[in-house]
Image 1 (cartoon, rainbow, N blue to C red):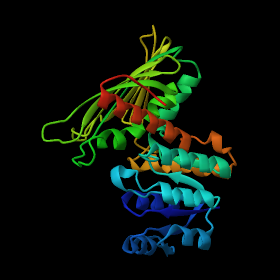
Image 2: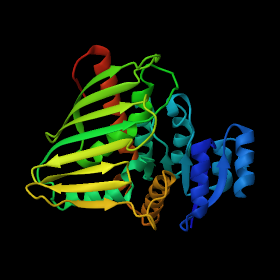
Image 3: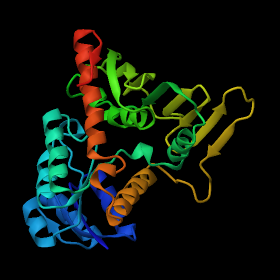
Image 4: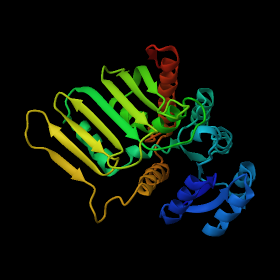
Length: 330
């Protein structure tokens, strides 16, 4: 059984901790937070020992896996130090998104995992749903033919204000990862954005993209619209047909080219995904299974390298917005 420790006990860290307790492949061996009250509350709730710094936890527990769910500015500024400490100790790491809003820090974490030969995954949970997995299977079976375009959109209400680019950095690691999952690496980006009434940040944005394989795409995201149905949509099309995923796990539809019949998968009422928390459960399960099976670090699904690639696209989008030009992803 895999010994797992959770670092960072905000709402996301507590969600991860609860799910580890349910997982048959893992045992929750400790929780860690620099805020003693958070660590103590989680330890009492889950029946494990509390730690207040990562090195002490690593020495005491020697976990197989660390889940890094620290927050920080724009959800990603506090990931680097605990991740590097865990990787240096030889732990596999499942980190929260974004991997980091600092590209150099993200590159350092990916390089450290590679040097240590351990698995490093990111919680890019939107690709780990039955609907997304079925869509990927259709693609791998050749049912889309030669890929042509992708359209992606996601919107929620988030009134927080930080840097002008908060919406781009915090929301779109998920959307860009989904687009890359189906269409490969992004070559160039052009970004336009607007500040909704009363907002100081670029709260709604549209990206035009060209992928290295020639696919073209658009991404629209917003922090200005209350949640409802739907709130996320992904359409991928090729010469043989197209699929549309609605709300991550709710439904996926395949529209074969030249065929009036369509194939629809709808999340079942019994035995299907119950809510958003199940996307975390599926993502954890995949990572634990891959670690337990000895999957090579470079073959981890939703890897640190994937998280880094998404952040590079977002960095290019911000540069495009600042300079009003097309930017090539570096």
